[in-house]
Amino acid sequence: MNFVKLGEIMHIPDGYLGPYTYIAMWIIMIPIWYYAGRKLSSELRSRQVPLLALAAAFSFVIMMFNVPIPGGSTGHAVGAAIVGIVLGPWAGVIAISVALVLQALMFGDGGITAIAANCFNMAVVMPFVGYYVYKILSGSTDITSSRRVIAAALAGYISLTIAAGITGFMFGIQPLLHRTAEGVPIYMPYSLNITVPAMLLEHLLGFAILEAIVTALIFAYIQKTDSTLLYGERSAQKMRMRKSSTA
Amino acid sequence: MDKTVRNLAIGLVALIILAPLGLLAVGETFGEWGNEELEEKIGFVPSGLERLSSLWSAPMPDYALPGIGESMTAASAAYILSAVIGVVICAGLLYIIGKRIAKD
Image (cartoon, rainbow over all chains, first blue to last red; front, top):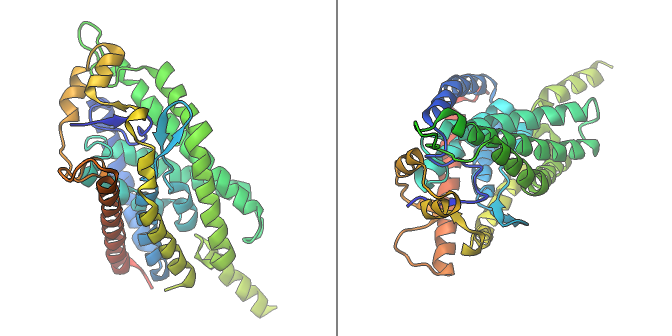
């Protein structure tokens, strides 16, 4: 039996997307995975390996924390924004994809046909939106700046909301793409005017707040204890050291 | 291992132990979209949805162990076991691959 929890629809199950959409998403995702793998193997430092392993595991577990929101839905944070900020967005693609594939195969959380669509939403959109929102809002502030904690929180908030909106869009185009000769929907029956506002509102008012808190807390902890772990910070630190040694 | 990474790992273990809290939110009261509920809502089950939804049988569907009973204790144990399996496979796989491809 295949039950779909009402709010737990961030993981698209089998049957909700028709072949046009899920096949298109596989075609989009295969080169993204390939490039992310290449990028990771050229950039990964051995010091970051435990953090990469931890990131995938953390994302897996945080997605199991279902929380209720008013209106009767349940949902969860993904943890993908903080992974994108700490490890860089391409490493985020790999880490979150591993968690999502395992969830689909072993636990039936998210469909098999929809693996690529789910990875696109949660393992690509989220770490990239998260990373760039954080980057832009942080500007040239010092790595220890408290503005960066706010930037991380907003990165979490915006990334999950956008991913949810895209998920809603994927659902909502199904009645347009797949109908029987009599006009009856074959896959997701609800159209855009229902799916997009539903997904956006649930996340704007609920789950994205949780994602913001999770992102800010972990960011603040790493920032306070060892900011050299953050993506791009080793090179910055080296430059500072070089500068101070030549001065 | 870095102290910060070690502490984050300890935090992860705490999350695993607390994972059953995530079960509280998915009681029957919140409703589930089974095919029956969908039929109730819109009057029919879309044909493609019905066909594809039984495509895959996961070994531990919805992070539960089939056949260990419906009690909260059993569900919590299965949920923690699921989290442990998820952490071991995710972290193990990426650690092994990461160590092989890391440059320095």
